[in-house]
Length: 420
Image 1 (cartoon, rainbow, N blue to C red):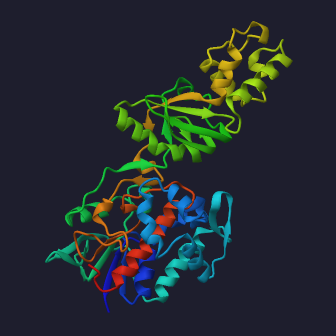
Image 2: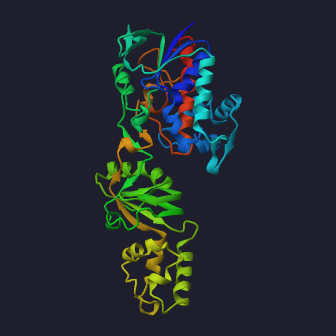
C-alpha cells in the first residue's frame, strides 16, 4: 500500500486526503493548527460556498488567474462532481444568485465535518498541532516529511496543500513555498487578489461616503489610454480607505496589472451608476428631469437619480455648482453630468495587503506541474493543490472549486503507481 502524506487541512488538503485514501493509499494528513478546515469554516460568510453551478467554460472565465490549467483536473472532479460528492455525503445543496452553491443547512461546519468524517471513515490518519519543518528529498525524489518535533514520516508521495498567504489567521502563512523552492520550483510573484482597493481621492479622505453601499452598478479599470481593462457589474461599498464589495474585489487584481504595465501608481477606475442605460438615454432622462424642475437647484433635482450622499462628489467631478438652477447651467452641463453619472472617474493607488486579501495571486509556476496529475515535473512523488498553485479566481465559489478539483486530482494520482 502506497504511503501518502498531505500537508495542510484546508479544502484542497482534505479533498486530496479523501481521494488518495479512496484510491488505496495509506494516508497521513498533517496540519500545524489545532483543528482542520479553518479557512473552509469561514468561507462564504460562514455558510461555505462549495462550488459554482455555471457551465465549465463560464467557470474558467471566472478564474482569470490561469483558469485554463484546470481543464485537465476537471476531468477528474469538476463542479458537477463536487456537487455529487457532497450530496453523496448526505449534504443537500441549494443554488443561489450567480450560480453559487451552498449547503441547505447554511452552515460551513456541515461541510467541514462531512469532509473530516469521510477522511476518517477511509482510514486517513489526521495529525493536528503538527507543523512540518521540511519535506525530505532523497535521490532526486520525495522521501517523506520531518515535523518540527523532529519526528520523520516516510512516504512515497507528498502533497503540499498549504494554501497561499491570504487570511493568515486560518494558518495560510506561505509555509509551502520554501519546500517547493527546495525541490527546484519557481514561485511567481505573490500579490493580493479579491482585496479592497485604496484611494487618495479627497472624498475618500474626508470619509463623506464611508459606508455608502451601491447596488446594480458597474466598476471598471482603465489603462493609460483610457481603454477599459476590466468591468464588473454588481454591488460595492465606499470605505474609509477606498472601495470594497464584490465588484471592487473582482477589479482589484487588475489595478496591479495596470500599475506594472504603466510603471505608475495611480490608476483610473470609473463608476457607472446606470449600467443598463446608454449614455444617450442617460442624457435624455437627465435633461427631462432638469427641465421639469427648472427652479430647483441641481443638487436637489438630482435626488432620485444619484444617491444623495454621492451628489456633491458627482457635481464636483462635473465641475458644477450644486446651487445652480437649470436655466443658469452652462451649455453642455447636462451632457457633462450624464457622462459623470455613467462613468465617474475615481483615482486609486493600489490595494490592501496580501494578509487582508481573500485570495493569493501567484504561486508555484504551472509550467513545472503536470496538469493531469498535479505532480511536480521536477521532483517525482511531489504534488501540489489549492492556492499554493499560481491559480486564482473570483469569489463566488470559483477558488474553492479549483481547490477541490486540484486536491482530488493530486490525491488520486499520488495514490497510484508513479506515472512519470
